[in-house]
Image 1 (cartoon, one colour):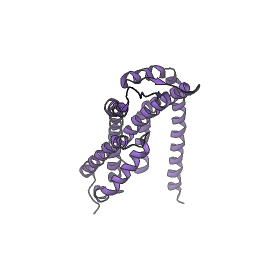
Image 2 (cartoon, helix red, strand yellow):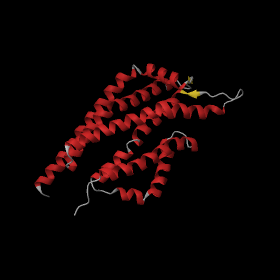
Image 3 (cartoon, helix red, strand yellow):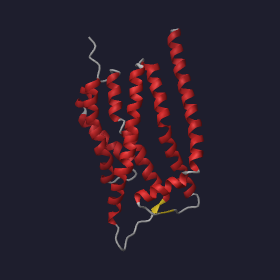
Image 4 (cartoon, helix red, strand yellow):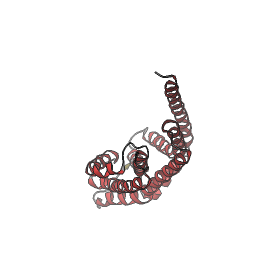
Length: 236
């Protein structure tokens, strides 16, 4: 093995190890801090979504608040994680600092845009629809842990799936594929979108799948358009 290549690989593994260590330390520390604020966050979520909750185990409130703190930590750490990812793109793929900065800013905008859209639009509508089947003889009792899981998975899931156009653009920018590839395999993309929506949604019903699948397909089509506009010219 050539010495320069070995040095590059060694530097990459060192960067990844340091990134993982820093992420774990920051995640644990910030989660511990947010845990003491999590009851206020939970009260805000309950008021916003108009839900009364119950718990059915001694440890359920503690575990639910811990999960809520972890979700908040991931949301707060997103800028730092994306900044480290953008630095890795410069080091590994030789992308320009201008492109990496644009990548980070676009990723932040899409991630927080997806999480915000989910929290203020999708979740209230979805919960009202799913609870519309109650009657005077059938009243819902929502478990605290299930509520936190439902809200957390949807908010983080929407934040991640909103990154799809950026991911498609990055693949085209690195010449791994072209926008024509996405057009050619559109039917397979629809199948994958349905599978992802089924996996990420807390319940397997068609309505929950549609709440995530339809925005994901719209983002896929938007990614094709954006990738076509910013793709580099073909190599001669």
